[in-house]
Image 1: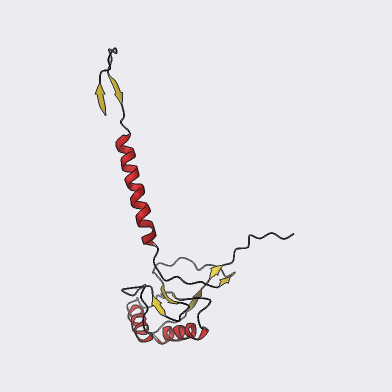
Image 2: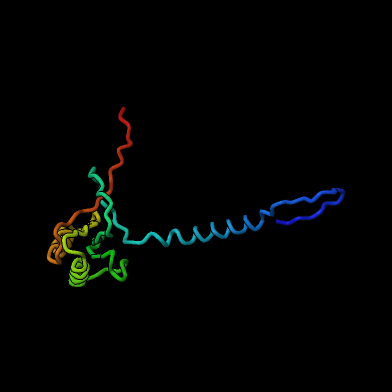
Length: 151
């Protein structure tokens, strides 16, 4: 805060300089604009739409296997989640992940299958997960938007 005397005034005048505040806010805005697109990671898939209820939030991150339209497998907990993995590597990584969980706890295991993917590839992913030790395997879908009007 700067204190100074104005010409013609006998008293002390204090004003807040807002220019540094504006500079900081603009820098933060630029940082957020650059980093926000980098936060969304994963493989782009076109999920089928259903009216199923959402799962309750879990304490542990679920294991999610993604099958894209080409039939390639991706694992969200792999060292490079945006690169496809072979069925053997997928099975090995899931076995490692499930063996580290505490006895009695169940970690959710889910499959995100592109609606244009070969159904056989999605079933293959589910079989690989069950062979790796998953007790149950769920499917991820998009919710249907029911905001249409009838005339």
